[in-house]
Length: 73
Image 1 (tube, rainbow, N blue to C red):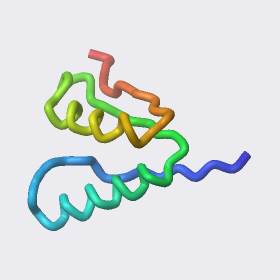
Image 2 (cartoon, one colour; image 1 turned 30 degrees about the horizontal axis):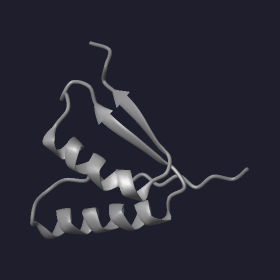
Image 3 (tube, rainbow, N blue to C red; image 1 turned 180 degrees about the horizontal axis):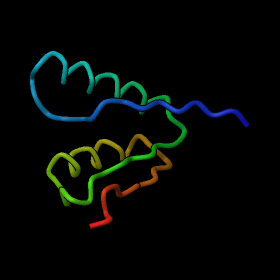
């Protein structure tokens, strides 16, 4: 099987042009994705941004894998 993997920028709040552009790209790829690998930082704990992104993922993605990074400490 062939797979296409897309590494998007981080989904972050803010009104800056760059942040808005990244959010738009993330949302566009979510619409096309068959599955999502969501990587979070264990050192940060559950953030408000994580909660907002989870709300975005729930209705759009039938398959989401949550990977917790930086958990070695």
